Amino acid sequence: MRRVADLSTELEQLLDNPMGALDHGDPAVRRLAVSALAGTMHDPAVFSAVSALTRDDDAERVRAEATEAVGRCGAGLVDEALGLLEAVRTDPSTLVVEAAATAYGELADSRPLPWLIELATGDGDSMAREAAVAALGAIGDDAAIPELITLAASGPPQVRRRAMVALSVFEGPEVEAAVRAGLEDRNPMVREAAEMVVGETLRHQRG
Image (cartoon, rainbow, N blue to C red):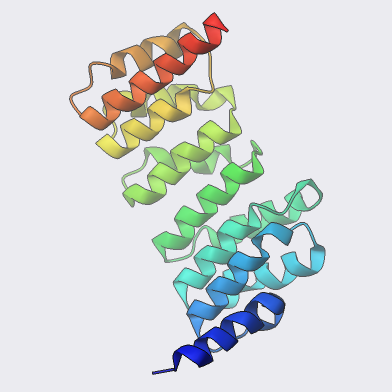
């Protein structure tokens, strides 16, 4: 095992030069490097270096961390990010697929809506489905409303809860009816989410 002093030195070096740690032999260090660089993804050089890990790294957690970071690229690199995410969303790791959905939500671009809807309404990994539902809410495109209403009523509990939160960004009588129906949901965490959405709506109306 590495000594604490060695780990401390290594961490200091990583913080000083995270770009230089992207090819470190330890995947945990590479993940930390990606995390340290996530706030500078608007820099084309950083974007290029981090995005390469979404395809080339042999550790799924590193690929997932890099994929999620792509969503923080800023307006100037959205097209490049969308192309990259389309390539990685077929990754065999559900962690990477979940990260791609999260990144799409960060980008808030409607172009990946069909894939997000397919992922959210499918029968795949529950965490990936939740991430897709959250992304649909973050994007805020009305085209997602029918699917979100359906998921709020008939999805698995975690997905129903997430759909309630996603619906909070939309308006309309059908949305209000779906959220109010959630107040009677058989699952307490779904009811709690619906209560928060209704409460927030009432506060806005009064304000």
